[in-house]
Image (tube, rainbow, N blue to C red; front, side):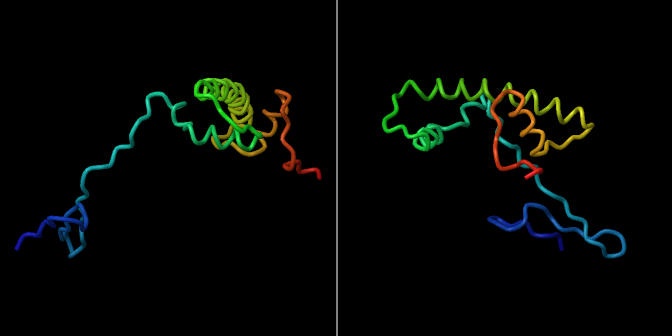
Length: 118
């Protein structure tokens, strides 16, 4: 009797028995991740609004959101360039918190609370 294919729900693949009674799973199609063409648009309007509220801003003009995205992209570009430089210098593939701390200190924006000496 052939295996049944569920109409709704259940596993997407079929179970089949192979040599020595071992189960071979035939999986379904892989799920593709949605590719965002302009990834800076991932910084949403409410996210920018929350950052502004944290900075003490009461009202926000509609033109600010694109300007904030451009400023954020410019800042992250400079910081991440230095972060990648530090990571490559260590011959590592993983970015650590120290790489980010050193990069921020290098551009004159030190972050406090991560100093291992204190």
